[in-house]
Image (cartoon, rainbow, N blue to C red; front, side, top):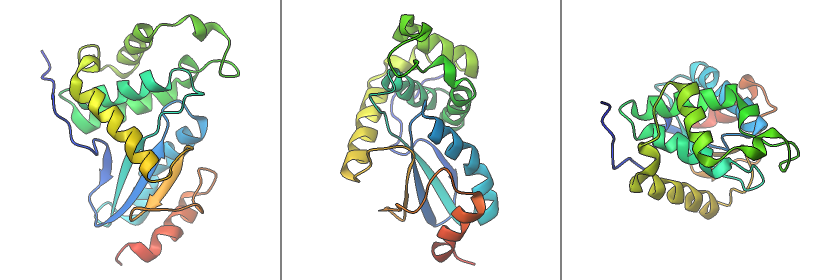
Length: 191
């Protein structure tokens, strides 16, 4: 039986291990966050994982009706035996199946009949990670609140948003290329 971590750190999902820091504020059902998430591994390769750390911060947005449940599912995955890698795997599964977690015009369509339990079960199935028990952990609830507070304290209201060295970077968007992102980061990463 998998071991659950009843305490998880405040930055459960990170890529790379370099001294420069990029924070990506992503909402797990947002199409623009999906586009940004897909580019993060290529950015890390372009800049160098020993020169950059990418921290994924989760930004739940209420107009995406299942946002809070899906966000909690990602953090629940981090609390399983797989840790950060499980969180990334859950995010990838959610983005690959976005249509399962969004409603038409944010308020209609067949997904309106889904319950939060249905969403949890579906993410467990898609990701191959049983998050049912982890979803109920107090530490996961604390992490949801931590992410919400952190985003608000940093003036982040929409996804995706980015911060370089803890300073919000309004010139960075999901529509840019990995090369453009790398150029924005160039002053911050050591050669």
